[in-house]
Length: 177
Image (cartoon, rainbow, N blue to C red; front, side, top):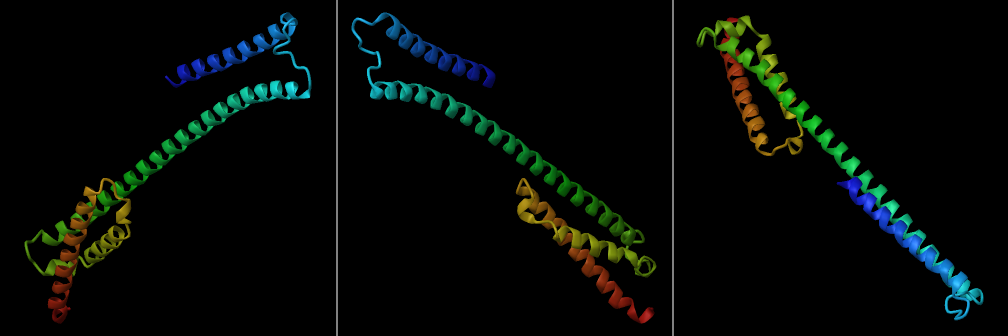
């Protein structure tokens, strides 16, 4: 569609230039009797030059506008690609952190409340802490669509509760260590 419009515009402009050039040439060559359009002094020549310059300026402005539009379109496509890549990386980060934290939570819940497991797996608390740190480092304003902010905030809240639970178990088991 864009190539079609450009072709039509160029054809119209070239047609107009050819028309005016032909009129000027025919006037100068064949209309000597009336001398209506033949330049007689420097003011007439300046008028013709201004007319030709105007046509050239119109052509140049069309070309400049077309280049600027193409550049704006390219920049917008690049911006959208960057935004999509950013969202994909944020989604991947949330997914991997959530999976890692869920594995740790699963290890903590295997014996259904056996506090000895918390002693046996002290690294799981660090995994939850690292997961929380990674999720909190995500700039929430960059999450798109905004509805996903609720999901990330929910994951952070859940992991905070798990972290609190692990800390309470650690405090309760302190005398046994």
